[in-house]
Each structure stands twice: as C-alpha cells, then as structure tokens.
Image 1 (tube, rainbow, N blue to C red):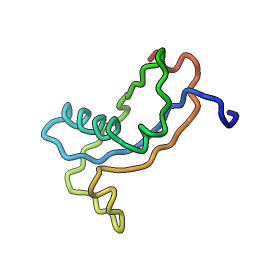
Image 2: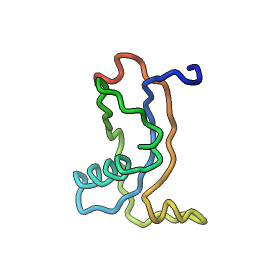
Image 3: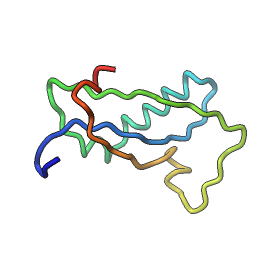
Image 4: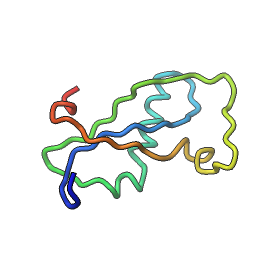
Length: 93
C-alpha cells in the first residue's frame, strides 16, 4: 500500500456495552463505531463503496469489567482499531 493510494480496509475493534438484550448489544456497539468522530475523519467517501459493519462475536459478562487507568474505555465503550487491507471479494460477505 503506497502513501496517497486509496485502498479498501477492514478493521477489528472491541466495544463494551450494557444492554437489555443480545439484539440491542449489536445495535449499541455498531452505533458507537458509526459515530466515532476519528474513524469518520479517517474515511474517504466513495460513491460506489458502501461501508458495512459485521459483528463477529458477542460475549456476555456477568460482572462489570475493571479497567484501570482507562477513562476512555469506561466512558465510551472502547477505543482503537486494528486495520487490515481487504481482499477485493471480501466486501461481498
């Protein structure tokens, strides 16, 4: 990937949310990602490419996880992304 060249990228991220049902967990987590200001600023809008989010895994925690020294995680449900270059056919899942 060269500097200045546009490429389709996928990402992994983790979000911690509190919800009443498994269905609402997915909605809350995807809303957190879609409304991430820094992620939106990094994206280039292309007319023929529709960004999609797929939830790969949901785990239930009985107790609230403890995060020492991470105020962003406590307040915003998580932060950070691991990006990878997508294969041309990967966006057709």
